[in-house]
Length: 82
Image (tube, one colour):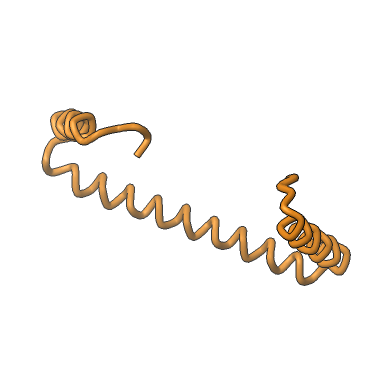
């Protein structure tokens, strides 16, 4: 995880504990969890919108099909051009 080992994480957690105190840590953790959850939800919405856009616009759909075909040909021929 980002090149951090167990000793570094322990030091960071001790510093955070001293800065915020034991009563604030659950609140911070809950807020962080909600933020990560909403970020993931937003990413999923963007992916769904992109998928819907591909399906709704014929030109985009054709381009996506051509791209997929080219990727399949690249896999078959062994070239990894991207």
